[in-house]
Length: 173
Length: 173
Length: 260
Image (cartoon, rainbow over all chains, first blue to last red; front, side, top):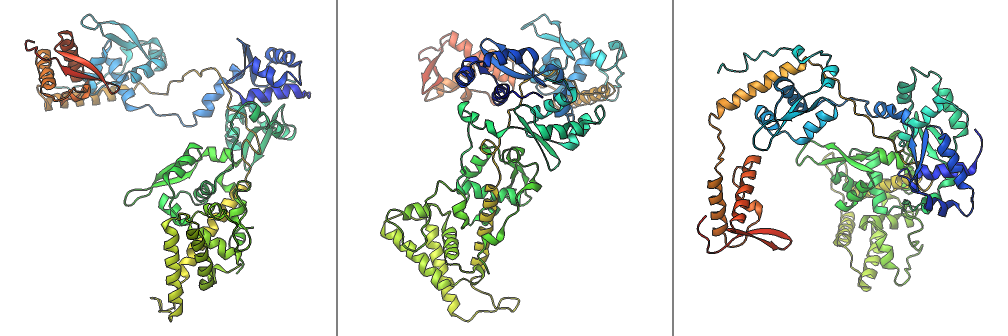
């Protein structure tokens, strides 16, 4: 590795200020002793440095992780995969079997309120989506499962959802 | 700059996990695809990398910035740690050496009451946390130190806490 | 070096070696002690006495001279300091009597508990001293801040589709139980009834009410919503009015309007 004190100094600053720093502040820090700092910065922005990507835009400079290492974040964080919370599982099961279904109807099945955070999480997983709206007061959204849901669970269509034996559970009406 | 994907990968991990990572975890992450990762680590520990210094101790690896950049903290108006008041230091020492420990037990060691403000301050530093509760009346909280405590004091584990010299503590018998 | 000098060096006035205390310094010096036990330990160390064989008479004399000095300068000392003086006096008195045998038959030293407490404090101070030998981030070494990165794509957790039928069966079972338990859980949807209740509530109150004071007993989402509708309707009809008082909105009945 070639020695370059100015480059290292610039990198040290960016690694202490990972939220980014303005070029104005950089100039105040470096300008006097190292008038050529901008050239070094341009060079770094162009080539990156090790796992770092340098972004300079709108007068702000930031060192970020090169996106090719993003997968590491999952490996570093997910030492133990978090179990799905029960409310999430149940909401998913109700939507999968009773779609299209409105939130009040889901709540009626579960007997308790379903926070919008739950539906949001299922949307984040790309497992559910809004299929339309029911006519009536408030035009409530109708929820259903996505093609990603089918893909994730290895189903070719909803018809392949495993059958539920509700005879024990539901009385004949 | 010479290209070395494995070195960059190692650096990426260390820059994401600034509190350090165990060699065991590194091996789990890298061992399969890059059996030679330890050689690269040894090399990096020896030479450093730009402004970074690699510290490997007690089975733990951490990337630090070279101390020659310490002055930057002030220039960047980042907070510099202040000397600890005696009461904070003693309370922290009791928790660090005798964890998990309840507040009444801390008070028994020091011989005076420990205001909740003291524990709050140590919590604000993110150095102590409640680890659980002791069975018994009132189920008092059990205090212990955090990973931030280890990070701040440059320890790779609690096993590295310095030995206590009791001869200095007690006058010669 | 006594531990209490090394602990926070640089910020602390050195405690003078002799018994002589410079004027105006006593308060600063006493401030450095975490309590009477700490002062006592310092006295014992300065006199190079043995914790396990404390010459109680001499230590007490020195301890009291500090207290006396503090009193003379009208410094406020915590009651703990007087309590310690009383304890020392008691130990001193018991030392003059023949030692009573303890349960094990051995004579118990009246100084034993004091010695134990001093030893514990001495250990704490040694531990604090050890802690100060550690380097600190930002003073002795420098850590980079965690690196910024693009948002991580969310990975859905692994879940087998085979779990879903069982879950649904459980939900349906609970659903059935609920319906069996409460055959007619019909909510009071009657908005008109609620409007009357809210109005009644506000009129009978001796002061304007906060929103939460008008809530019905049953506070599920539906009932709270119904309540809000009732309030809005009453505001529209100008049977209620909003008041801005002490940084909150309050509801008050408008006098004279009896026909809702």
